[in-house]
Image (cartoon, rainbow, N blue to C red):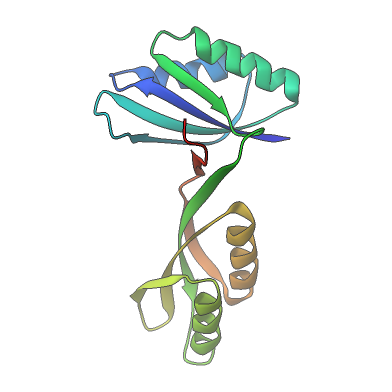
Length: 159
């Protein structure tokens, strides 16, 4: 089972290394990790996706809470939240296939960010499901390269 954690941390040198070290030191695998600043310049928010059962999640949460630089840990499994991921990809698109690629991009609200003679660079954002479906539809055209940001998430509650 995949769990999404939102971890508010002090914005200090070495915090990311300590959090990642905690995971590797205890044999937990991180599916995705995103870190970015918050409105408060002294804090950053980490969105961590980890696989495991409830016991693994409980251990991860307890270990994160023990780190001095960690301010708050939220498990989005039990809360309402919104999440998105950004993907940049380069796909083959010649004069015969370009219209179909553009049509699929339009359906998924993807943006064309670069046009070359035999390929297009595309930006698409959305949930895991949307991204996976888009990539599945692009695969027959020939995906040349891609990069994914990993999930970022935000609670819908007013805490």
